[in-house]
Image 1 (cartoon, rainbow, N blue to C red):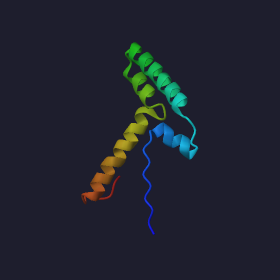
Image 2: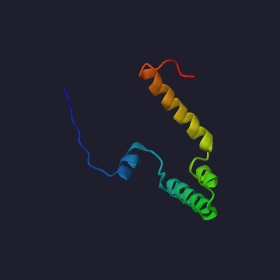
Image 3: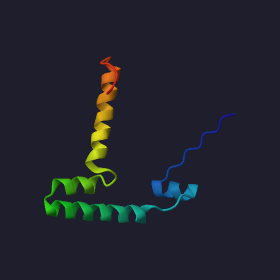
Image 4: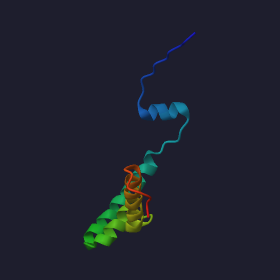
Length: 84
């Protein structure tokens, strides 16, 4: 036997039904903090400060490592040899 139940509800109602916490206040606080950091970085006009505001966990070095990973993967898949 197969039973199909269809419920129409908003994401907030679905989270409440499943017993998940209301994360809206936390999301708002995080977004406000990110906006403040980005505005402060823009006000300085320093590109490095802007990168640190956008990518606080590693900054440009993390981006470079990720970019290297993508290039090495593409090279390996295309048969260009082993990545260095």
